[in-house]
Length: 120
Image (cartoon, rainbow, N blue to C red; front, side, top):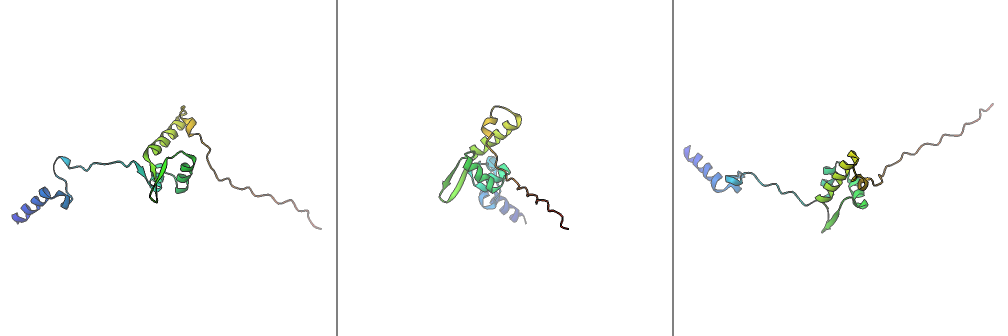
């Protein structure tokens, strides 16, 4: 039984990459933030839908580029839009950039039928 414990201890200290356990001063994996994300992740970060993400790209509010066939949106532009939205909520000068026209789908109002004359 003690041989099994020693073998397990040796595995964690010798081969932490194999066991998945970190050892030593680099015990916490470093979180590397991406410089650009997919439109789907950008939508999750901004809490908007897929269509709205592409509208923001078309309006120039989000910077994007193509990497092969994949579209990437820069985190810098996502943060900038977030800051503009906060500024607009606070009513500061940065709100002028954020005050771009919003696209809303207007509901069509039904035409009222012309009153019909009562037939006798």
